Image (cartoon, rainbow, N blue to C red; front, side):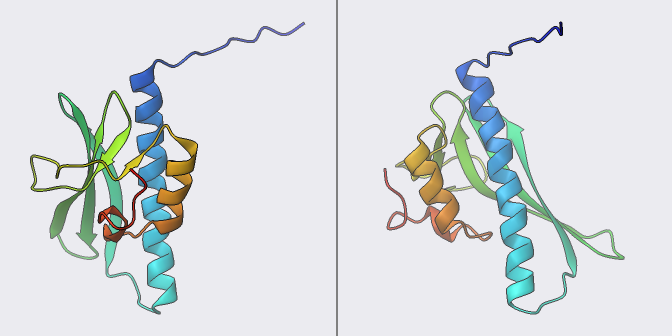
Length: 129
């Protein structure tokens, strides 16, 4: 007999887990972009998220190989309670109008289908919300 534990995530934990998945998909999309365009990667690109009061801020971090140069830009804001994804208006705030939702399966699949490592999937004509 084995002992198994069931872990139940609350809404915010689920959104955080989906945010990490979103970051991982962005990394894969960036690698695919480099491969498709035959471009050697001069930068190591990571997508991380930072936790704010209301949003997870998804940030693209690029470190130049053999250098100390680092470039950071906001890729998206994700509402910690609802899972809504917003295009950034600036470093500190999202644009109005959710583009996708990480908790809605249809919206999530559409987001991943349209995923662009440079944020093109966050323009209003691409989302379902």
